[in-house]
Amino acid sequence: MNYSEKVMDHFTNPRNCKKMENPDGVGTVGNPTCGDLMTIYIKVDDDVITDISFQTFGCGAAIATSSMITEIAVGKTLDEALEISRNDVASELDGLPPVKMHCSNLAADGLKAAIENYHQTHQQN
Ligand code: FES
Image 1 (cartoon, rainbow, N blue to C red):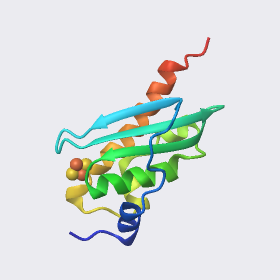
Image 2: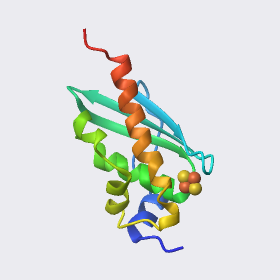
Image 3: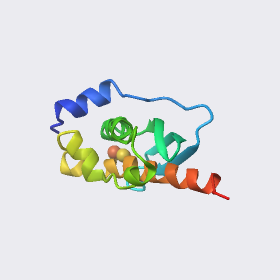
């Protein structure tokens, strides 16, 4: 299988790979195809993602895409972050082999789940 240098870099040296204490939002998603799991944590200030981290129990492509989505999402507004698709993540990584594209669903879906959780727990009065 051919992985880009960026995929290998994020797999061997993942960014923001840690559990976050007291996150404002947290989302866990599973991939029904393979059983892999990903949790994304976010800190939010004034509708902007100020910090983000992840824990992934999964394949190398899932780890690389989680790592990359943390770099893409930080500094974005929640609305902008919701627009991030699996294709955005894959193209920032200079592509993924077609059979591994489903792995990038976890990253995009995990981020959406974390944002949803933030909205549920921070309802505006
Ligand atoms: Fe499970 Fe990649 S094989 S996320």
